[in-house]
Image: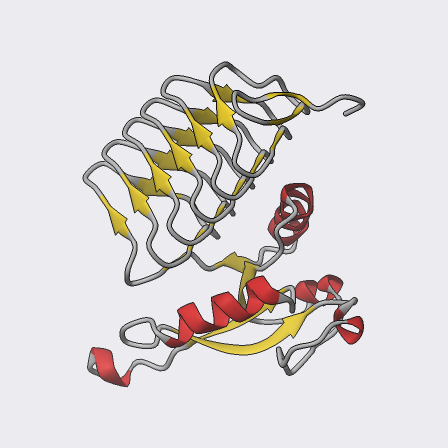
Length: 214
């Protein structure tokens, strides 16, 4: 059997919103068609617009679906919960890299991670499990992005940045070199991070400061 004759692996997408549509576009454009989307899991899909069908039920159905899966949800804590559940069910995560993304030497990407169009990752950077890296994100050299983090479009990480697990970085935010974003922290859109952000903190602005009441 030649490579062209190998049938694509079945893939279910957990989530049926805008991120799911982006992932569908990514999958459809992959060379060699390694995956075929067989359905979407989203209990709330009936309240949304869009055409992510067929709907196979809520995310609990992942325990029963014989397919690889990818998480199409932008909430880092939900991504973490789903990874824990899927691992207990022995489900197989799919790692998806858009053909326009570029990865330099020494870059590693964990299982279940999604790199959307135009992502640029520089040398010797590690990206963990089930990380969502949105369009046109730049990740500098020697960074570490831990599991379940979400990087929104046009975010930029300087060299040596560490993003802890389940952190969220908003659209267009910039993290200066050698800074750390703590576990579960939220960085607002357009923020400029000039110092470390503690775990679970919420920051915004230029330079970024803690959001009052957060």
